[in-house]
Length: 113
Length: 122
Image 1 (tube, rainbow over the protein chains, first blue to last red):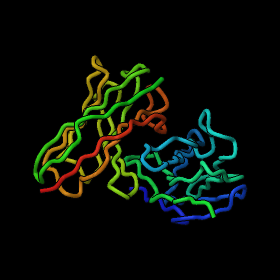
Image 2: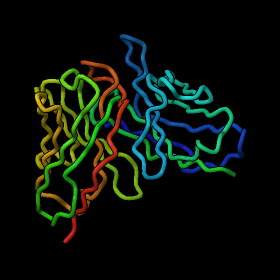
Image 3: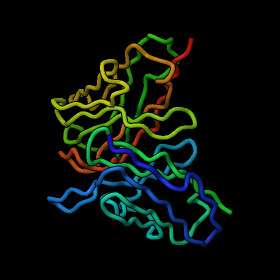
């Protein structure tokens, strides 16, 4: 199984400031034949299902604000929120879909400082 | 609008069985791979199982292999998860999820249901 590890476990950021969440996979999720990283980011607010934010490590889902961006390749990935808004308070998960089981990171809880 | 509606959860005793359903609306169901993901109370997301468009290719997490069975009825636009020999540690909200790309195994999950809670307790 591909183990996904996020850091930090929790994060408090001031409104308007940058928030950065890291995700590391124990093995590469880059598929060499198409040069795509099989890595996605989800946002989950309390009492709600997860919402897709980013796929292929850096492609923003339709309708997701452009303050959300994803970067990285191979085993190291980052989700960045450029200017934190109050509605961004949530738990964020990375997930690899390179191979089954499609493992998730443990989640990062983002709060307002 | 894509909509996924889970049902079938509830309280079940250890060793018991339950069948979850996920009714799909707003997309061509038989074109998409589908998944089940669970979340224990206060915990993170755990992938459970996936099934391809016509039900011929299936995969499970090791923790549920041999106890859970995923299936689908494309005529009724419904996904199922038959859960047998339930354990206390199977207590969770179970979500069904649709992949983003039609016909593709390797795709992010772009739509999720609201989830159904299964509680395994005596």
